[in-house]
Structure formats: structure tokens, C-alpha cells
Image 1 (tube, rainbow, N blue to C red):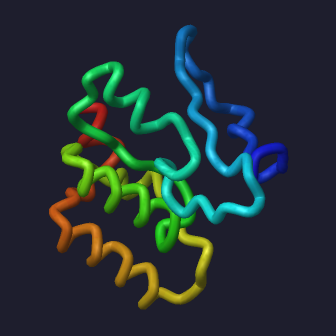
Image 2 (image 1 turned 90 degrees about the vertical axis):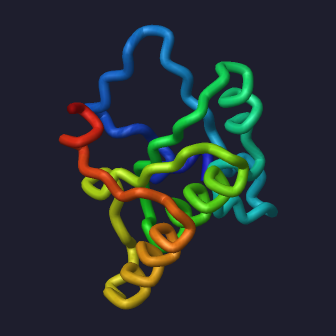
Image 3 (image 1 turned 30 degrees about the horizontal axis):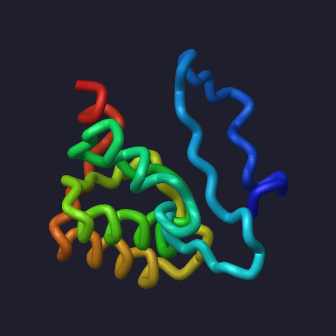
Length: 117
């Protein structure tokens, strides 16, 4: 939720000048499971003719999953960066299920090294 400590960017994250930060979760009444919900993400991606989306974040079993599935359904080639996502649940089966849903939808899981390469 915007305005909370959990919504802050990590203090060691160094964004290049000109970076865009797209926020979600401004309305406490709306459960924004996907980064596309209640945000300008789709509009921004379309404005810059983006074709590929790389998903990082938490939690894997909710926001990462929903964002990846929505990006994929909107026609973006979608990747989840395995070492850039983390679960909140301790339920390994739930996390594995989320990963399988992404894979079944055609979302490729890649590593940070593959992304940089």
C-alpha cells in the first residue's frame, strides 16, 4: 500500500536519471493484486512501445503471479526473473503452484545473469 514502509524502494536501489517509477495501491479499498491494477503501467508500456516485460518483486504467489499473467494476456512477451522474486508464504506447494501457472501460461523464468547477458 502506498505510503507504507513496505511500499518503499530499497535504499540500495540506484535508479538511473530519468527512470520511471509506477506506483500502485493508492486506494485501500481496491486490492491491487497485479501491477496493472489502479496504475498507469499499461498506458506507460504502450506509450513507449514496450514488447517485453521482466517481472521482479514480491510475493511470488500473488502480485508477481497476477502481474505476469496479466502482462502475458495483454500480449507482452513476459519473463519472471527467478532471483528477483520472493514468496511471503512458507507453503512451498503454493509457491510451486504459482511458478507452474506462469510456466503453463508461457511465461519464461530466467535468472538475473541471463537478463544481464
